[in-house]
Amino acid sequence: MKLDFIRGAKANLPVAASATAYGSVLGVLASQKGLSWVDMMFMNSAVFAGAAQFVMVDMWTGHLPIFEMTLAVLVINLRYLLIGASLESVFAGRGLLHKVCLMHLVADENWAVTMTELRRGQATSWFLFGGGVFLYLAWSSGTLVGLLGGGFIARPEVYALDFAFTAVFTALAVGLWQGKKDVLPWVVAGGAALLAHHFLSGKWYIVIGGVAGAIAAMSRPLEITEPEGETDAA
Image 1: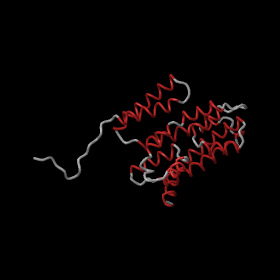
Image 2: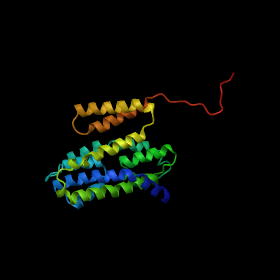
Image 3: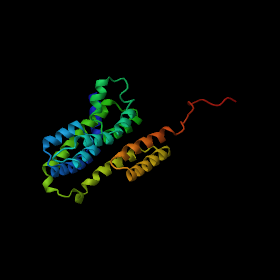
Image 4: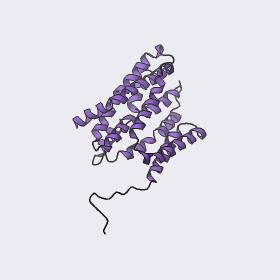
């Protein structure tokens, strides 16, 4: 358990640096909205989902639109239904409490790193959790730095800090590429997301793109391989 936890934390070190960078952007935006460090830390601990937190801060006003904010976060985080399903083998044999506690710190980054490790046959729930804890600390540090120093960075885009969010997900996507068999699901997911973004308001394109890509992947014909040493009868 301890070794897997440490291994997961180390494996997420590169993406944690990016999480700190774009977490600082969120902190800057939060400072401009008047959030306190207590508000920021509560949001980090209760939500811990970068895209959803950016939307929450964008919607933050003196009179909080609780219902609208909750609905927006729910829509954005629907992708975690797919993420949770993909982690079934990692949590196999574990109790409900174990799953609930460890899943809370699942982010896109440590999920992607864990899926890569799963293909090597070395992923465990504690590996996933180790990455989650490390990412949480990196993310929280970044948001607090941005929040407390927000007055010094009026335009984070000048320093390309806003691009860190895009860059890290591009790198993770490349790491998940498995070859030609991924072409169809990726094209379908990208096309569906673009269409949804064009025709629908809000963040529905995240969910629609993910579901469309998953359906395309499930629709592929199964690759049947014969056991080694087996030959056709003469």
